Image 1 (cartoon, rainbow, N blue to C red):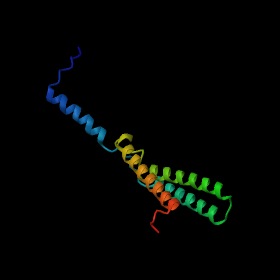
Image 2: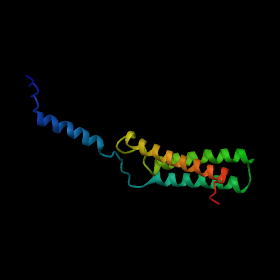
Image 3: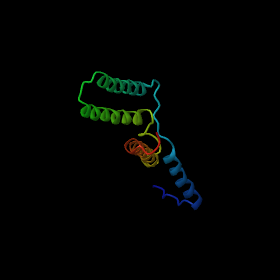
Image 4: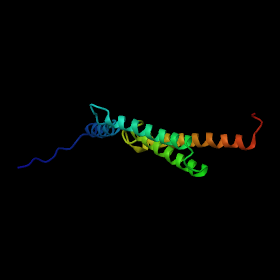
Length: 126
């Protein structure tokens, strides 16, 4: 006959729940012996950088199209570096990474907006 599961005490339940939380908070990284992903990410970053450099130095496109292509390449490079080098997909979960990432975007957007403000209105800085 099968035995009925015995009831847990409050202390055992607390430790069991605590272990679940601690296991959730542990980083979930897979170890590789050779960093092939990082090498491919580095090569991809170099290709995107030299691609933008080539487009600008050789005046391949008209200025508006060139700016659009460079911005698209910059977004791809930022996504590549966040995924490969900043390990945005690994770790404790996406919620732990979204708040700082939103803050970084907010600060960067503020810096760009204030730079444009100063350049447009020449607010006595020069």
